[in-house]
Length: 253
Image (cartoon, rainbow, N blue to C red; front, side, top):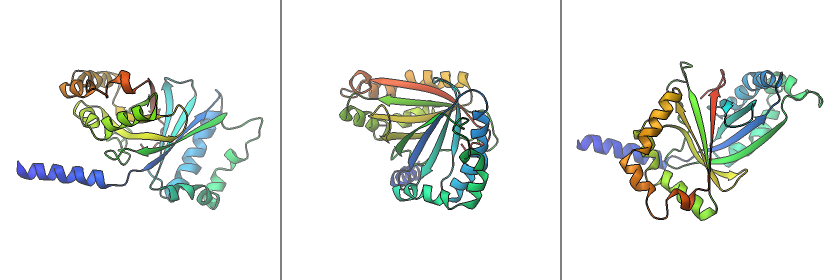
């Protein structure tokens, strides 16, 4: 038992000493028609290969199922540092293969654009979930239902308290015990509806999702944590938004 405990402790320390990633969370707002297919061609054949060459991996691409107006596509791009993130645009511009493969995207006429607009947020991963966790089903292109949840708070103090619950007080550990599988957990450094945190879970299907959330709601440790003075939802969470996503066929997550 001592060996198991030591091994678990070492793994926890290893996770906590890894430098948290930064994430660019990009939403493409689209119109019905050809835009979805044209964007997919650009992402699959130009953007993702080029970003991978620059060291950004894995790249997640997700299509909105419900929770937001459709069609809409989200792209998750990890970066190891602000320096690597700042150099990305220059690196792409110097990538001849990228510029050639993306010609149709870049040369789209103003009267026939590939997308309506983009909305971009910059996120930083939690210390206890410092990297994207690729679902086990991704390699085999198995069924994946992604759940994106955003927690808004009424001020910065309340926001930090909710982050603390996830990152330091065991809420993520309770998620895992209850079958709620993380992809990423992050707080928003720059974006809309600040202050907020965002996380993504993966489920096999909606039935599995409901079972895991029921386990969580009935978990004794969660009931204890969520009733801690200063950390109850009415005190620190002002709004929760849930969006359900499916992975694009070429998504690396």
